[in-house]
Image (cartoon, rainbow over all chains, first blue to last red; front, top):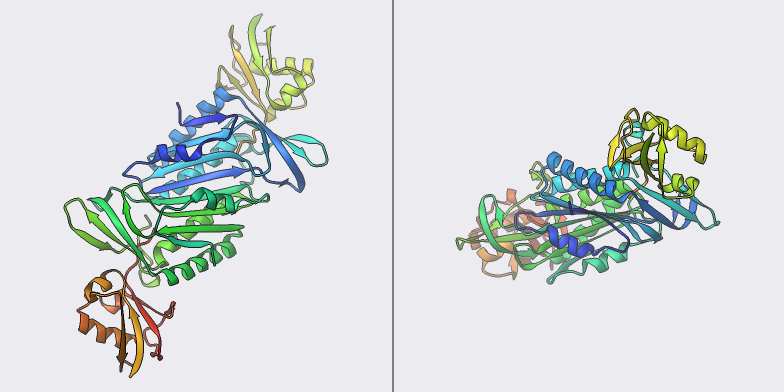
Length: 149
Length: 149
Length: 80
Length: 80
């Protein structure tokens, strides 16, 4: 239960990447989600992430188990930030290692897609005009037809 | 003509990643190819990469142009090592940024696939038994039906 | 009456004005519990927009409450 | 006769015993040039396994040679 973490400070992603290295693995795929300066046309000054940590960790571990079972990758790690983030900050980091590259790409994509749909993490965006609002990106099986972004 | 480099020493990939950051981009996808300890059942002790640098750089720039045109990503960078590499060393690093994640994944995958097929770079593997041999992974249009790995 | 704990996140936390409360309820199911708390706190989200977890496991709305349960109503998520 | 430069990489470099040579050739095309050099150096690769570049651009085998061309025969690649 330590492949997923919910972090209040920037993660040492290079250490995470090194922890994934193993001699039989030739392919490493990483994805990072960065805070964008606009969302749906509104200028964003920053945002706050809030997590239900215990369930987010358990659900994240399940997602990684699923990715390993589906794609046969060797291992994966994920870190999601909580607290206040500025434009350009890394909100989520995912790394996947595999003997071959095809599986690494597919598993990494699967993990970020599932994280966005299933992890109990919420985002409150702060806008340059001064307002702020909770953003709903997705919500599990009942709302699966969201546009992936 | 500086998005691609052919490097005789390990690259500062964190600097490359930072160079790709821009406020409008929320998705970053990276791929790394690491030297594996076995290839087709033979134990590998290390390998040497050799490049026709001038053409490799030009072809790499063309591949990045194609990826940007096809997938609408914002930018990409690629570094390929030459010289002697040991098991676990990073042979190639690719980073792609995009406003949204779908395009970042697709463009990153396109770039590594095309690099493997088109860049004039050769690999001589050294085996634990003491032999060594030039490895042919792919060769352009006439050999396009290779198995992606 | 069943003694339980409810934790609130995101807009539910803001609307409830707290992150957590201990309470005794006569609600027969998680659905009834949410209806009761929605009335008390004025939650704007309908239960159809939420998921619900008990003791850190996603559960069905029809599930009855047990003494000591920690219940979390989960607004639409937005990780990544 | 056309004065050109040929660069060798990978197994062609090893089989030629050099990375580069200047030479004058009567070859009318890149294909003829490779046939001439294959005979001289005993290259094991058939031209069907190679690509060819002139002055750092991929070219067709039928292309004629021009004075000062830098020609590179490209064995099957294996980057990544």
